[in-house]
Length: 226
Ligand SMILES: C[S@@+](CC[C@H](N)C(=O)[O-])C[C@H]1O[C@@H](n2cnc3c(N)ncnc32)[C@H](O)[C@@H]1O
Image 1 (cartoon, rainbow, N blue to C red):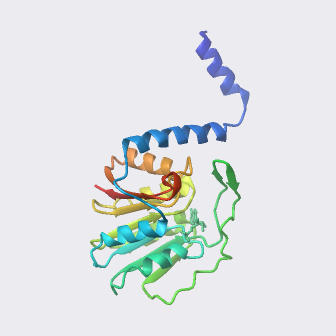
Image 2: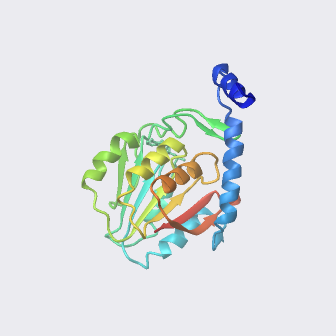
Image 3: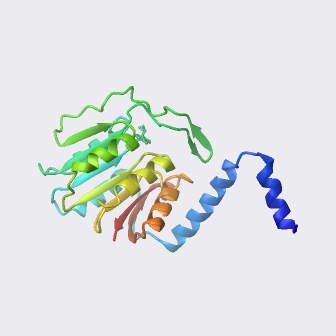
């Protein structure tokens, strides 16, 4: 038996848990390489500026905004006031009882149930806003059975977790036709959003342009899907 095969067997039989730190470092290295290869044409100082920049691309036309991860509704409410069109619609998906699994966000871990809104939907007077309560894996299939996308569509991923984000992206694949804007709130919180985005775009052969980034370490990012 050669040395590499022996090492493989020892590791396989060790029963040690995989290292989250190694995962984290590798994800950062991959993201660093990706950022070098995909420079953003514009970098903005805050996520609100990023939202305004992308909303400006709608040219005053109505659009659908679909948010994965709502919590108390700060970002979806901000988006709703960016469009005065009666035909715009805002859909927010969340358990409203917090993260369904622990979020190992590199240097910090957030426990199951973090971002618990007590099961309550965010308050809004805007009738164009609709909340879909439950785990994406339980609510999205039903939603998609009747959903018809309009000309302009923006999808915002802010679910923090790799599993949730990948599930959402894969489920909305047929809806996210060319011309869809796709945003991430935690792109550089390795190895979650970036890994989900990479796995989705590679597995589904999706091409994209980077539209803009925002905040430190390119944490927020917007893409135009092709
Ligand atoms: C960071 S918070 C969203 C914050 C919000 N977008 C904002 O900026 O105001 C992330 C949310 O994702 C939700 N979430 C994560 N995975 C989910 C899943 N699989 N199904 C439903 N909700 C999920 C959590 O419940 C949590 O409220």
